[in-house]
Structures are given as structure tokens and as C-alpha cells.
Length: 173
Image 1: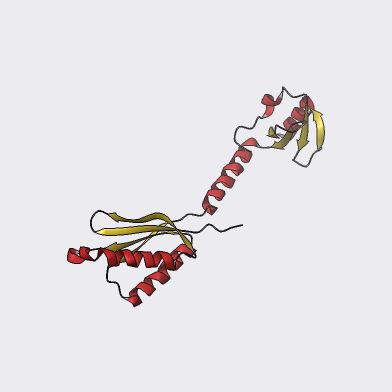
Image 2: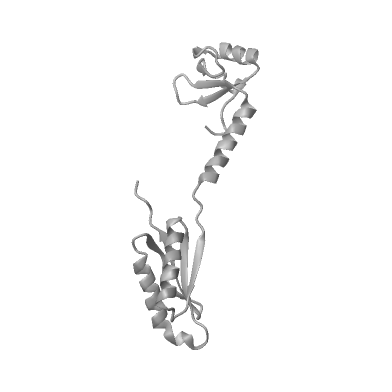
């Protein structure tokens, strides 16, 4: 049901219509009889299924119908899964305890449906430890491989950051 439904006079091209709604006669009737019923009840004749034979029309207030459609669309959008990009920062010589602590947070972020941007930041002369930073991120990728997939592979961003972006695995239905 979209907002391009035919209403009232726009339905005059049909000889017969299937009438539903407003606790009245349900069944097939002529266009003239359907319009007379709509006018008597003070509502609109709205086509809700044009492809049916004969087309299905509902006796409702059209403005109220549009309002309900907008409300349903808004509700669908609010229920849609919104994912954020969470970040974890590591140093090239991060200790085992700190790594495990951040790994736990990374698991939480991914199970909540968020994406994860993990990066190793090299400050000063630490840039000489690029291999340690790469090892650390590869270990993180393998430790999270059961719940995540690589969205953007390991790469250098500028000359001070090595990043990887992980996203949660799609759940099979």
C-alpha cells in the first residue's frame, strides 16, 4: 500500500469493485453503489489492491489512512538495525592483559551488531615496530574470526596508524 492509491472518482473506470471495511456490506458491487455507500457514511472509497479481479476497495477516511501508512513506515525505520562504528586503539607493544581486556570489548561491540575499527597507533620512534602492530591486529582478527568478518583489510592510514575494520557475521536464518 503506497500513497498513490486511487480514491473516489479515480475509480470510475471500473464497472465492479469488491468492497471491504467500515462494518458494512462486504462483497462485489458496482462503482455507483460503492460511491453511494461511501458518501452515505462520509468516508472515502480507497483502492487497496488494484491487481485483484475485481479491484478491492476499502471504505475509510483517506487522510487517516495516509497518516497510518506514514506511522507504519516510521515504525519500520525505527526498528531497523542501526550499526555504529566502534573504535579500539592499541599500541604496538600492548601487554597481554590489556589485549584480552580490549578483546572482550571488541566481542561485545560485534555481538551488539556494531562494526569495529581496530587500530595500532605508532607515536614517535615506535614506527620501527610496524611488524609488532601487524602481528597484534592479525591476532585480533583470528581471535574474532568466529563472530566477525573482515570488511576492510589491514592497511596503513597515513604513516602513524595501522587499521583493520571488522563487521559482525550475518546470522543465517
